Image 1 (cartoon, helix red, strand yellow):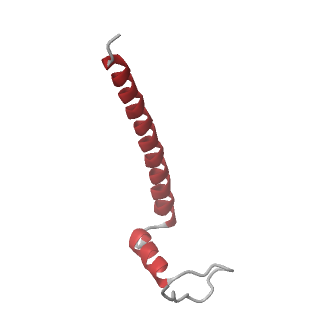
Image 2 (cartoon, one colour):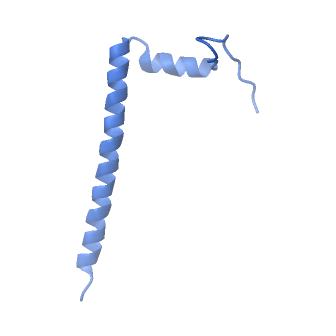
Image 3 (cartoon, helix red, strand yellow):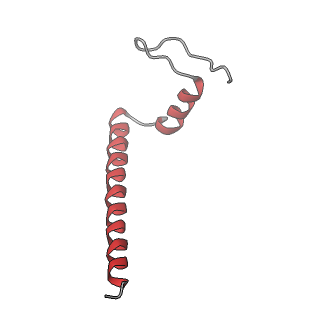
Length: 71
C-alpha cells in the first residue's frame, strides 16, 4: 500500500491528499461558487434522467419479450 501525503489541516478537521486537490482543481478550477453549484445540480439531474432511461429501456425490453412469445 502506498503512502498518501496529506496536506495540512484545512477548514477545521478536513485533510485530503494532493491527488484529491488536483482532481478538484481540474474539475472546478476556474468556476465561481454559483457555477460549481449549478454543475452539481446538472450532474444530479443527469443521474436521475439516466436512471429513468434505464428503467424505461428495461420495461420496453420486458414488453418486447412478452409480446414475442407465441401463445
